[in-house]
Amino acid sequence: MKVGVFDSGIGGLTVVKSLLQHRLFEEIIYFGDTARVPYGSKDKNTIIRYAIEAVEFFKNFELDLIIVACNTVSAYALQEMRESATCPVIGVVEAGILATANALRDRNSNVLILGTKATVNSKAYEIGLNKLSFTNVQAKATPLFVQLVEEEIFSGEILEAAFRHYFSDMETPNALILGCTHFPLISKALSNYFGEQTLLIHSGDAIVEYLESEFSFYRKYTNPKLQFFASENPEALRTIARKWLYEN
Image (tube, rainbow, N blue to C red; front, side):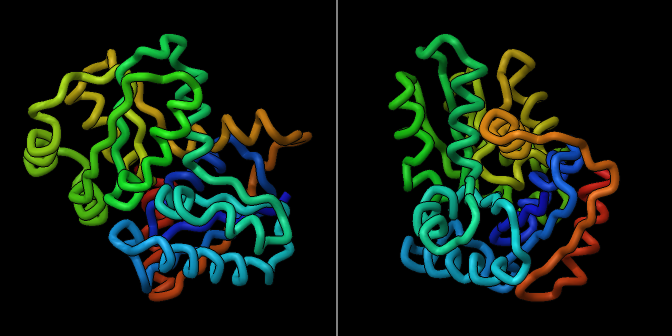
């Protein structure tokens, strides 16, 4: 089993980490469009064009599956990627919606989605959750979190100040969807801020849950082969991958 993981930058490494922990694939090929990140502030047509270019890149590898780790791309370009690809394409948004539905029996639960401006503006999570009868769903664009994670600020006063900036006037949610793959790196701090009563939905774990429900995996791979590619400065991506995958 050979899988490609696509992200607009480095955030999708948190999805790769979940895939490694569950040992589902023999080979993982990661592509981060680091030259054109962030996608969260770009228009829909641009996001679709970049996503289709990523599919063309992956055609060099005879993949069994493509995982779209970027929530923004999953929200805007999944169908176009599927039409262009020669293998199945799944995205973190649909996986996150199903993980939320599986975790919360009470459809009146207060669900808060965090994401980029583009992901929030798409309303992809709200539409999907509303179709599953969730009635108390809201979304909050939190772009500062992306910058803080890339500065490796995973805790401390600066992050706490950002939490107060975004959440001071909000009630504590029953579930918090981490609608950007950067955000699992601050999940511990988010749990401390909201309390243990708030369930966190992690894109990487949601993808694994979705994969195991939709596909048959007949064996576990102990030492999967990893390849990392980037549209700009691939060595920097590989350095971050070593740190995020094996140290954090």
